[in-house]
Image (cartoon, rainbow, N blue to C red; front, side, top):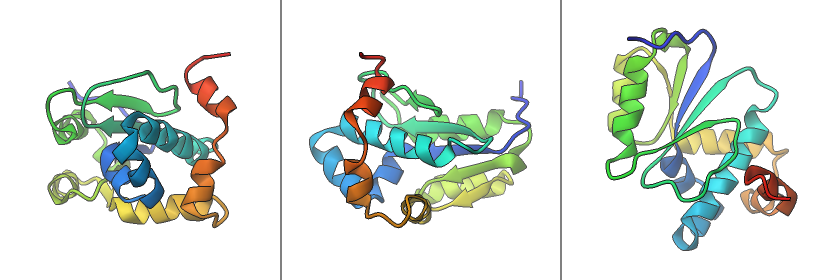
Length: 155
């Protein structure tokens, strides 16, 4: 049964996007969970005033819950690509979907399904521009402990 989506929807290949953001990529090597949390905060800031549904897909297993405006899915023991393709297939109005990835296979699948597509590196540039042209490192460093505590419902 198809999913009735009637608003603009973004499906984001999270690990792929992290890999296109130099500072998040460096964090991911030491702290994969930390890089995911910081990406969620950056995306929340970007999409907070937009009436857009965001789905964020990560490879691997869920570690700690991340509180986000985005709906976050983990692929467990399979590639996130499989979940992304299943989600695209399940949505009725594919013209409202924008898929963000740099995986050629995913982008081609999305294009054939009539989705909008954007490479992760282009979206990363857009995110950086949205943060008032701050450097990526400044964006990451500007994320406060309070925002991180809020993500985990910690006082």
